[in-house]
Length: 278
Image (tube, rainbow, N blue to C red; front, side, top):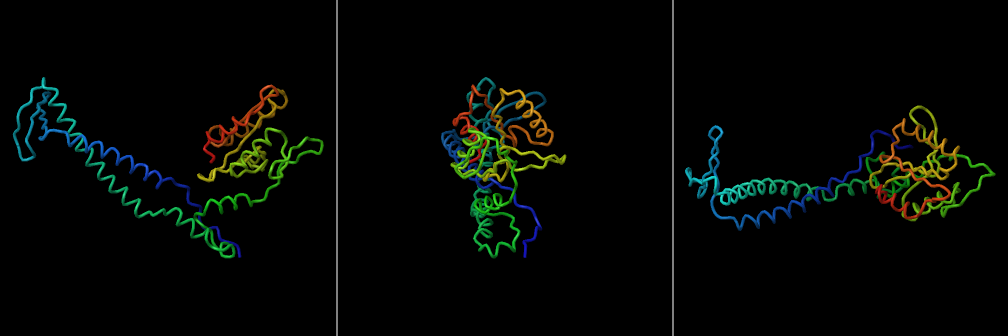
């Protein structure tokens, strides 16, 4: 019995991590404001608007309905109490947000992991009956990599290089990219066919999975850009990808080299870091 496809997967979220970061940020600002308010003098400022005129009055407390008039030239006193009033209002808002975030974080209790474990902790014999809304990274990687595909054929007379995973690739730079991805635990597929919305089939050099976001990136390595025919075909392939929503910086990674300027491992590492693939 196959599992039923009744719903889509939950999108990955950093909600709880962001809530925790926001909670700590607010806590820091609250402490700073509370420290400043402790040093503030007693009393509060009352601002009266009359037409285009603005007058300032210093009151002892909220029960004081009159207050002492402050001349506009006394900018030090006016500034002190305006900043105090602002800090008090900000602190009230921050305290309210802090309570809400604290409640969210306590009630969530790592809810993402709890949802994922409901499926991932089941034996494989039970998983076949379930269409999960979320799963562990390990299960997601396994399912993604288990989808069979037939890569682009490599002619017999073409030089090939074997990766540490035993795959055959077409160049030394592709060999380096593949081995670095594998070493860093980044799931990838080499020359996996991609059917574009217009029906055309292309073979990106690497189809790379960002496990954290569950999003796929395509990595095109253009290794002979000093060869005119190769460059022409590379540009044609790039235009096809652009027309079908595969955009550099969004879901497309491009590396290039010439015979005089080969691709370095530091550049590959920089790409992986820049695209936050791990």
